[in-house]
Image (cartoon, rainbow, N blue to C red; front, side):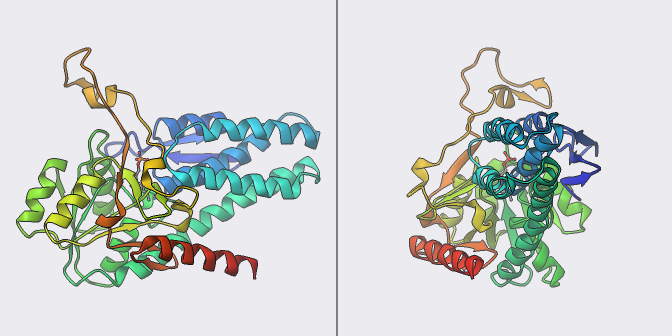
Length: 351
Ligand code: MRU
């Protein structure tokens, strides 16, 4: 199952708003189409949003009609702003756009055709690296998964939320591939049902045993001793380990703590925002009230009711036993383990 594919100077996106009943692809030929697709959650999940935006920059370069490199550079600044305004919480979006900007700055004096080729190549490289990163997350995460583990997850942090393999579901996949006989409890994840529509679908496609529960069942399922481990993804992690993820993740983590169940977040280092000291500073996207008042197009709440619809919450670091990354599992105190991991990464990329 691939969330995106670069094909013939266009970006094919698996339309995740239609899953699980329809498998349809949207062909994006302009950066604006990619931006709209990100806003509408055709493509979603932090790493996938980042790489889709990178391809959006590449499309911006291809769609530019002029032949002068200065004009292209100016045009791409507008393209970048448009893509950056799509969704505020997943830091991977801004990380990916910054990486594309750095590439652009490196090649801006080359002929237009070379700039276009370089941007496309960079986005393709990011796609490839994302899959490798997720496999590494799976490798390290597998170490904390006991045999026969029953694992609860929230939202979708799988192949569909990335360029392949997944983060939280990457760990689950690795444990499944290692023959550990894992079983997944997937929270349905209101309001947009990423757990029911996407996680259950993705795991069933791969033959990984899954039981779907509604969000309000999670506490009871834990209390009944049916869960050994909680793993979810991340959209942005602050320097102290506070972790923004899909709304409901915080409740799951608190319930797990109460029931003595370990909780891990699985995410690439690109999900860490070292500029933010705590989760209080993470911008939380608020979405259309209709996502709450309507279910599958059917109105389920009185017209005009006041709605609060934050798309994410922040799990405070004290509820996390670890953050599973592509360089290993970061443990508390997270200030120290996070800065050490980022410093080691910076040294390895400069040497
Ligand atoms: O609103 P979404 O569907 O983009 O939210 C996705 C999540 O919250 C994921 O858990 C997170 O991005 C991690 S994806 C590997």
